[in-house]
Figure 1 (tube, rainbow, N blue to C red):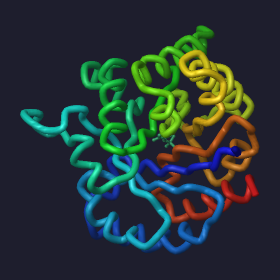
Figure 2: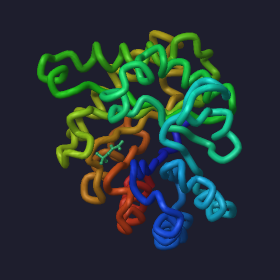
Figure 3: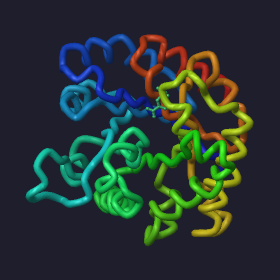
Figure 4: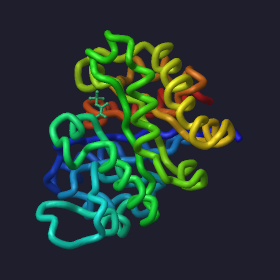
Length: 258
Ligand code: PEP
């Protein structure tokens, strides 16, 4: 079965007040909703999830959060659990490098594994981010780092559950820098390191069933190149997702696959 492409928008720590988030969503909602052949997910800050959920009700646009804690509840001041999010969202970004870089305990490989298991257990679809930093890339360690992160994050996850996950290959040096990977490199790493690790864990069929996005400085100009790659099943978009021309980016992504 061909994998349906999926485009996810990571608003990061932007558009966090109801008025501004709603105003932005009103600009893009109709355009996004008309796009076919692509799954679409918006991941706004926690503070506006309720407001955005109310406006997405009758659209085919899904909602995601940007992180979650693995415990269902309890003494974890400041955290939001997958159980809480499951009432509101369908997706949750996990292991984003902007978090892995600054929170070693909460974003270690074992912690991300617990988050993935908790998200799946509550019916959420994880968007699991993996990627090497510049030093690792220059040292030729991309495959080792990326495949190691995939295996660690999915440890103990059953094949049927793994098939529900979205993976995002996000080379850290490409995130928010304006320096995207080349489509050919993204394709190679996704095929070799991401699907390679999935095949080792679960076998070829599962490796071929899982959708894998590219993320890192994706723009309306470069998205067609990524979508043309056979291993790339869409994109996780940060900076370009909070601009009104995100609709053009999404249209270009869909057109490149039609
Ligand atoms: C991201 O936030 O996951 C991301 C890829 O950001 P950007 O598109 O801004 O590089």
